Length: 447
Image 1 (tube, rainbow, N blue to C red):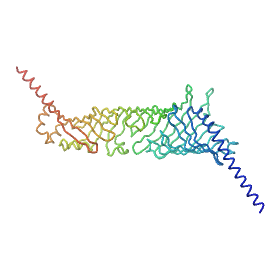
Image 2 (image 1 turned 120 degrees about the horizontal axis):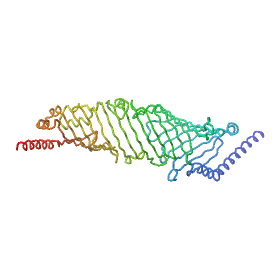
Image 3 (image 1 turned 120 degrees about the vertical axis):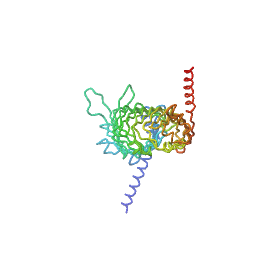
Image 4 (image 1 turned 90 degrees about the vertical axis):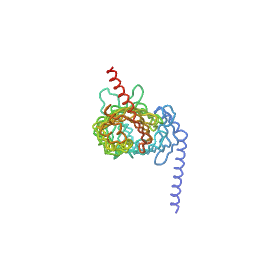
C-alpha cells in the first residue's frame, strides 16, 4: 500500500513539476521570446511582424496570430491564425529535421485558407510543404487545390557560380495541373523570384486553357507573367500581365491576344454561351483596374469573328419584329468585327459591325455590367428583306432606285433579356435629298 501511495505521490509531483515548467516556459515565451522573435522576423522579412501568442506544450510550439504587414505597414499582408511547430529530440540531434503544420486564415486582401504539413532539413536547407488551398477569391471555379512547395539549394553548381536557392511549386485538382520552377536571386539588394510555369491544363465551366507555358517573376510584391502562351479552344491565347499583391485591393494590367479561336468549340464547352454557334475569333485585349472593383476597370479591345454562323437570338428576333420583317428572324451573320471599350461598369461600341448576305448592322452604344442596354443600331437591308415588310412597301421602290439598300436606325433600351426597340427610318431623308440633287443636276444640264 505504501509503495502504491509513493508511486502515486511521485506521479503527482512530476505532473505538478511539468505544469510549473510549462507555465514558466509560457511566461518566458510571452515576456522574452515574443519580442525577440518579432524583431528577428521583422529584420529578416524587411517588414513589420507581430505575434499574438506563443505557447509551448508537451507536443509542440504554437504561434497564434502571426501577422506580416506590407512594406509601408498600412495593412496586414499575411495572417497566420495558427502555426504549429512539432520538433522531436531525435530529429534535432540526428536528422536535423523539423515538422510542422500550419493554417493561413483570411486577411484583408486574401480570403483563402491553407492547411499545410511539411519538413525542414537544417543540414541541406531543404524546405518541403504539402498544402490544401481552399476558398481562393476570384478563382473559385477551380475549387479546392492541392499542391507542394519546395525551397532548396541548387546542387549542380558550375565553377565560380554563386549558391542559388530554388523554389518549386505545384497545384493539382481535377480542374488544374500546374508546375512552377524558379530561382531566387538578389538584384541590386532586392530579392526576386524568376522562373517558368508549365500547366498541361486549366479547365473550369467557363474557360479552358491547354498546354500553358509562361515566364514568371515575383519582384517585391508584384507578380509578372511574361510571354504566356496557351491553346485556347483550338486557337492560341497570348498574354503579358502583372498584379500587385502588396495591396488590399490588388491592381492589375493585362495585354492579351486571341488567334483563331474556334467559336463552336467555345460555345459547346463554356457556360458563358448558351447556344451552339461557329466561326473563327481573333481579338486583342488591353485591360487594367483593381481586382474585385468593377468600376475601376478600363480597357480597349478589337474583336473579329469571321466565316461564322451567328446568332438566332431573342435580341435579333426582337429587331425583326420591330421592323415587321419575318425573314429577318432567320438571318445568319457571317462576320462580326469592331472595337470595344470598357469603362464605368459598361462596354462601349462605336462602330461594331455585324454582316450577313442580306443585311448589315452597325452598333453604337453601351451594354452595362448590370445587363442594361443603351444603343443605336444602323441597319442596311437588301431588296429581298424590304419587300417582305408591309411597313416599307410604299417606300421600297424609291429606296432601291436610289441606293439599293434601305438605311434605318433602331434604338435599343431596356436589358438584353427584355429589350425595347424603337424604329427610326432616318435614311429616307438622305435618299430624298440625293434624288433631289440628281434631278437638279439634270435640270441644270438642260438649261
